[in-house]
Length: 458
Image 1: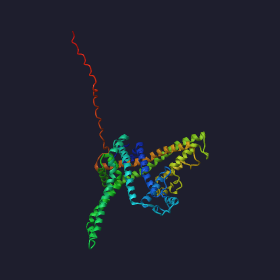
Image 2: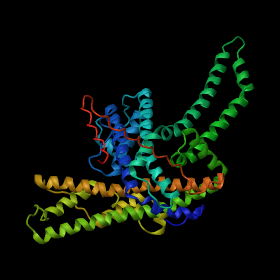
Image 3: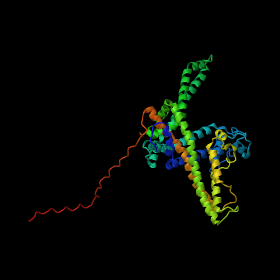
Image 4: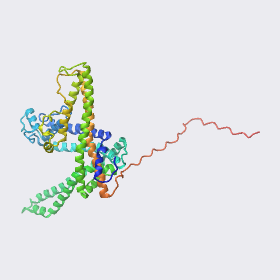
């Protein structure tokens, strides 16, 4: 890693800081748990409320999971899919597969929506307080110690010890917003109750007189809301770098954003552009790597030609195509929105869709035909798992880059606001192991025979 200068040039170190298999693996674990638990809960609840409204995914294509979750959200929060655009793929699919018309509302309860929201938010925070905290700790230590790396075990132990600091930091902001909003709500409720007194209008007069307090409350809520939306990315790095508690993390995040707002926005913009390029490179590199490795195996099978499918393909070629088909989607290849001319790129820079187009262009997965023998089914499952892990690590780089770059931004802002050098990071003192006690002789053991005294010479 290049020498740190404490300014915007340090952000170009983000690529190498984030390109760490340990961070990518921790990020992959967090992504898998988020999709499996939060996404699974969403799809399950949506299906439970309306079994015909949610089209559950049958493969590992990410946007199909997102589509199913979007359908489930409309069912959970609105009780219907009417909120989807009429010409959207989700609405057309739902209209084709639902037994009831699209406008028929399913059973819906606000208590269910509220309980679901609370459960998903807490579960999401719990997952990323642990894995995100460990990633931030590794990045904070590496940046401050000029490339020196902390052990993954120690980073996970740190995340475990500081779990509640990571967990409560965003919740403190949410609680603050709800508190001041509730105060205004109570004031309005009291004013409405006073209107029932004879003559009427008393409550309106009281509310008008106390309106400055409501405006002050709104001012505080605005400060908290803006500070939370902007300073939230700095909460994890604050705890990881300082070993502090939730309140101090929130205080630092708000202070650095409000003290240097234009620096903060500039750093975020530069990180976004740099990340767009570096993330695309890493994912494209992983796709090409997997394609070349699988192509070598396909070539070996084609030379041998020991067994062929009814379509004339060699066995491993069919396995490879079906494995790629479970991970990549051909929906984007048919979309004209991903042209590579300047106008098309500016109108639709969507990196996910463009990477899907490139991946399908490189791999050319053919749709599956006849049913494969059992052995090749197991081969397809194994190949798909390896592809999912390898490409999942590349996907984990997205999270690793985001957290690592926010940690770098935190260090730069800390130096500009508090004057703390970039190489200062919280280090935990190693616990000294207690000295081993001297072994005591067993009870009842015979005492050792005394040594004979030296006799004086005759």
